[in-house]
View (cartoon, rainbow, N blue to C red):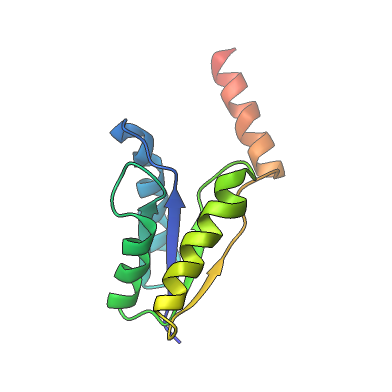
Length: 121
């Protein structure tokens, strides 16, 4: 089974807002044993989620780990992303798609917030 990781961001008209996710994807490509790592967006930017999933399939993936690059558990994570993924998967039954968790709470995020506070101080 060939696995792909699809990072899914919200999307923004500000190109620099999307750059962090692309940097995460580039770093994962260097550090993970997964050969296929793609990015996709819920809104505004391309590729959209369906195209991102299709890009994974075209690269040879038979399993996609759809990872929400979202901080909070809101409607996008609870409803929109699962709906888009389910629609795509119904049209592509040979590909297994599993959605991971959003970031939510993590001690690592607390460390990052503290780091940002220290930068301001």
